[in-house]
Each structure stands twice: as C-alpha cells, then as structure tokens.
Length: 137
Image 1 (cartoon, rainbow, N blue to C red):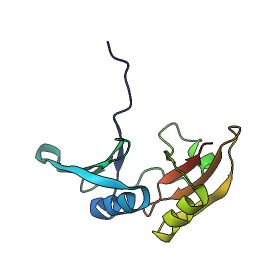
Image 2 (cartoon, one colour):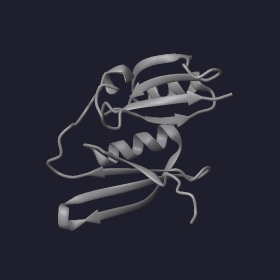
Image 3 (cartoon, rainbow, N blue to C red):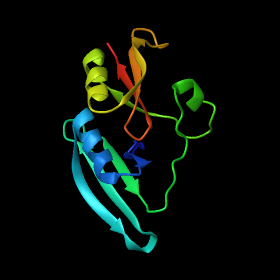
Image 4 (cartoon, helix red, strand yellow):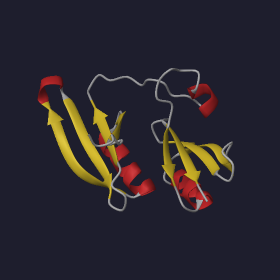
C-alpha cells in the first residue's frame, strides 16, 4: 500500500470568485477545475499550484455562515478545529507585504518561529481566515 499524502485542503468561503482570485494572486495558484453539486447547492473551485502540485479547494454553499474567525494564532488554538493554513514561502518579508497589499490583514509581522532557524508571519485573508507564511532555511 502506498503511503498516504495530503491531496488538498478545503476552505469554505463567502465569495468564491474573490477568494479564488486572492489565493491565485497571493500564492501563485491557478484554477484547476470548477464543480457544481446540485443536490446540495454547492459550488467548488479547485486551485492547484503549477510548480509543486498542492491543491486548495474553495467551497461555497448559499446560506453558509462565517465560522471561527480567530484574530490571531493563539486564539485559533483555543478551538478544536482547523485554525489556519500555512504556506512555505521564499522571501518571507516580500511574501508578507504582497499578501497585505492584496487585501490581507496583517496579524503577526515576520519574526523568528519557535522552530529553530525558521521565520514566520501571519495574515488574515480578505474573509478573515488565518494564513501562516513560513520560511525555512
């Protein structure tokens, strides 16, 4: 049996088009496919990163309501749920400024991570979801 690997992360959003546009602009994703599940009135946009193949699935269902919108990572850790999504970036300071210039809210400016030799920062995407930026040596 092959070892399992993470295929994608699903993120429910209020504005599917705007979220897709932001994640493509901020992190270099491309739209891979668009799906519709009529039985539950669900729209899906699957994003893929052309260079390394990771995928981010954005979902929208009319009538959905905002869930946890933690102000920072410490608050997110108080909820037993997915608290944030993290992206490995090169040039943390530039990636942080780019995300903010595209409409993200700065949460934690670039700084050393608790993990030795690693730097990190946090932003909240335009809908308020926490996004960690990690730069490894």
